[in-house]
Image (tube, rainbow, N blue to C red; front, side, top):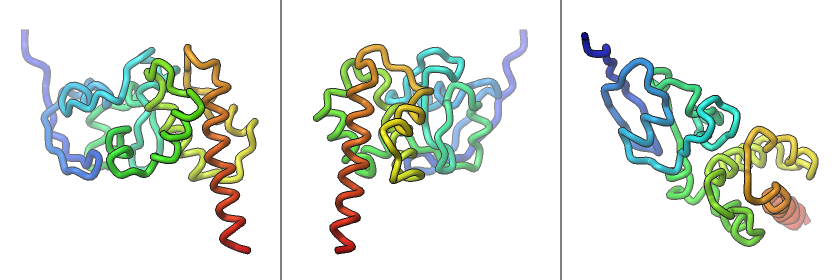
Length: 167
């Protein structure tokens, strides 16, 4: 029995340059968890349906269980750990806590990354827009109401701040 072929990949993860040898079939989520110890990227369904493995790849959210590590070669990956360290989602994290939207926490990293992308791309999103945007992320604890409330609170606070700054 021969060993699996390997490939060396070079990528930037949370601002840090990484060079690792991986097997061609290793998923990005597994690479992040096993090779780099970044456990915030969760594995749920492993079919791209639940959103627990959501990360940013070159600025866009992707399902880490559907992307191979070799596909991230020469790209930039951001995980919940990197966004937390950079304090770029602190407002969302605080809103999730305030609205009790992080019950068991399993879906939280994917929800936060998805919510951050929504707010970045659609800062005037309505409550219905929020519900639609996060519909690809499963949560078994909150019933989504608390999550939607938290995201809407951040959107409304930013809209209010923008309005006040223009007056």
